[in-house]
Amino acid sequence: MGLCHSNCPFVEQKCHRIKVSRPTEGGVWPTTNGFSLDHTTKSAKTLGRTRTTSPKTNERGMNLGSSGGTSTSGHTSSGYSSGNAPGTSSSSTGGGATSSEMPAEIRPKVVTVKHPESNKPKPTTKKGKAIQADVDVIKEFQRCKEENILRLDLSKSSITVIPPSVKDCTSLIEFYLYGNKISSLPVEIGCLSNLKTLALNENSLTSLPDSLQNLKALKVLDLRHNKLSEIPDVIYKLHTLTTLYLRFNRIKVVGDNLKNLSSLTMLSLRENKIHELPAAIGHLRNLTTLDLSHNHLKHLPEAIGNCVNLTALDLQHNDLLDIPETIGNLANLQRLGLRYNQLTAIPVSLRNCIHMDEFNVEGNSISQLPDGLLASLSNLTTITLSRNAFHSYPSGGPAQFTNVTSINMEHNQIDKIQYGIFSRAKGLTKLNMKENALTSLPLDIGTWSQMVELNFGTNSLAKLPDDIHCLQNLEILILSNNMLKRIPNTIGNLKKLRVLDLEENRLESLPSEIGLLHDLQKLILQSNALQSLPRTIGHLTNLTYLSVGENNLQYLPEEIGTLENLESLYINDNASLVKLPYELALCQNLAIMSIENCPLSALPPEVVGGGPSLVIQYLKLHSPYRQM
Image (cartoon, rainbow, N blue to C red; front, side):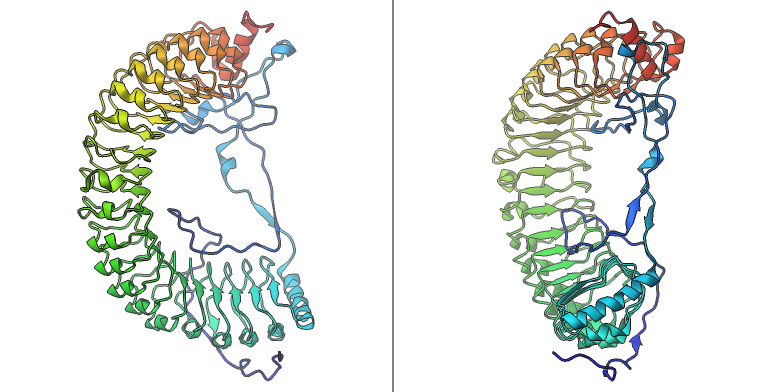
């Protein structure tokens, strides 16, 4: 293996300059919808350390965690995060006053509340200087020359310049330079004739030297997270490339010379500014993965249908108005990302893509699908039609859901679920119908025996069918933002229920059978018209989250003291709640509590004014269970 010397013919070649766009932020962006089309390389060094800051406290709210601990609170409509109930300010998460006069055995744990600002990324301090790093590079190149090293990893080493002595590293097969501060490459890079993998991602490159075309063995080129405003011409001359990553640059145009890269199997142009894809894409017949997501494409060329070996095509987050019929030629397609475009229709030919296991068109303007499309895609297990313009379920009958396990129709205009539509969906476990126009549920809901998660939130339901008790496998039931006035007594038969969300309905009472839900962990009753809670609520010993704020509660049952696992309690905005049971002090795991806008007139004003922490202390001090 000969070494490139000082009269290397590549040394005098000039670097092809590229227009510089405004600098972009670094870092790796998350993928969407399950697509992960870029490879990830491990860093060789860790140069930063995290500096922590002390949390701040507010005046209201409570955290009864261990000394020096932190707590964050925030309430969502689905009730899955522990925190402020709706209608309360951020001040409901803070430490109450403490009493130095209380006996040690009833003194509460120290209250510490995490300030919202502490959720921001912590500043990092980098070690070393770039100048020293460049000197180390020369040493590494010398070692590479002497030892005929095949793989060199200089990633995340604060390198700013690649010295010309890189020409001596002709033995290299893999060269990793990602996560540095390199703005240009020396022409000597073209001397690495054996190189197969070159990772230059997360740098500041605006151009590439023409000498790069001499890397006749190069197969993998990673240029993610740089500052390229166009694809350098030299890339089109790398005919041996099989994998090309150009994600997160500022590329606006893809040239016709793309056809020269006929060996490509993976091409990622994600997160650029591309408005048009050339017909030359059709020459890349070896492509198996093509990521064009997060660009500005409005149309695709018909030639996309020539890429017959594609198994993954990601087009989500573009401006696509249509999909060409030639998409049906991609018979090997398994994953197709169409989320968040401007599509109004799906081509009939897509039924030929029978290997797809997921159909997701979330965030478009589609009102109907071609007849029988979903039934033709018999391998589908997940269907997501959320955030479109559907007024009814797609035509195709029960056959279209035969093998489906999850259906998401959230945020459409569907007013009815047809009787028997899921009669063949024996494996259906998740159904999301949130934010539609449902006024009733189908009479055969009792046959959905395998259902694990049901979301009917934000509809117009006034009644639940009694045979909902047949859903013996149900674990999550969301009925928030409806018009329910009662819950059937049969609710107690849902033995596996872990989450029950009834927020913002018109409930005046709960059936005592609610106490039979022994596995229940989260119960959300916020914003109803409840005047009391059933005493059987004390049987919910696995409950960790209870939200009953914004009701008409006059008291809490003494049995609440048996909720030994309760961590978050929201009783805010109950205008008639004048006292709290002493038994509440027995909830030793209680960490977050909101009592805002409750009169609690049976307690001393100075105790109430001190916030939840002081209220709990008072209840402990005066409790008949004090010695327990």
